[in-house]
Length: 465
Image: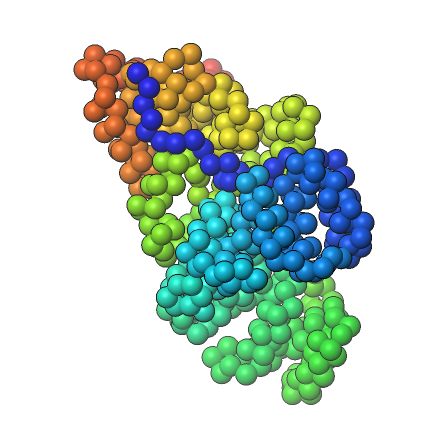
């Protein structure tokens, strides 16, 4: 019996697609504004089927970089890249449709594109959605929802979003006013070297009575002056000098100057502690992270904001594995992450194998590893494979039902909804005998798990503790 409880995994939830030889060089040409070389290289790679190259060609036509601007051609290329699971292309499509940039305005479809990319963890998509709700573009203005999208991007290290979160806490728009939080988020953005945040925060520290700190303002103007040779740096130097004359204690000024000399920008990853990322509470946004929508995404196989970096997996590693058909480096990284206690790495790799490598059999192996360690999502995905007969010899309602019962113990409310829906679907179609075997299977797995835990807790012969 085959149960179609949920559809095929969305490839958009993992990493970018295969990169062919020459793509890094093409991007380098683009970045240094050598558009003639970039266009030639991207055109060749696009013909070979590389969606990242197609996306860059879309940008060149859309922005008139090295070619005559052609929004229609840009739209065609972004749509083609989107079909290759380029989330950057999805963002561009979303922006074009939401704002009517060179094409007929279609706010609903634009938002769908942006939300798809946001679910895949694309920071630009999260930022654009925040802007849409903050400005009322294509949706009713809602500062709480805008704050939610900005916060999700800020937690991922997006310095633009971090400044927006700081602004929200400072003004009390979308979130209760909190000067401590405002200080924290403005500082994170500024410490990444974001010039706009540095300028704004220096002014706040100079003029806001509740956050007045002339030494701090002096420091940020000094940093702006040191790192910018244009008008920004020159204006900052003037303001720095004016502030310096107001600071009474020379010792304080010297101490702050020393800190300025030692200052260096931090990385996005360094800007937010891992513990805060895990514990942060994001506002519920209807149509994105509410219980019903999240259930639908899970039922489609989507993992909210899936990212391989916590498990040591990079985009280049995935691209190399696809082109070389050698997954050794990926498996090594995931195995190491799992041995370090990051058990969700197994299910992440299972998703990757199923959606990007079309290897359901290998996916089952890794879902099994995750399921055996107690990861409810891995148990749920493993149940799916048995229900649908993917990666296993035949569909097996009993094993499917057993793993669903086990995964139903999860503390994740969103996953619970999907698991319960799947359980009801199986119970409606399976025979009484299959359900009984499924319950027996779940009990056997439970006993096996308890025995393993007991072994781990048993002290060794020479354990002095």
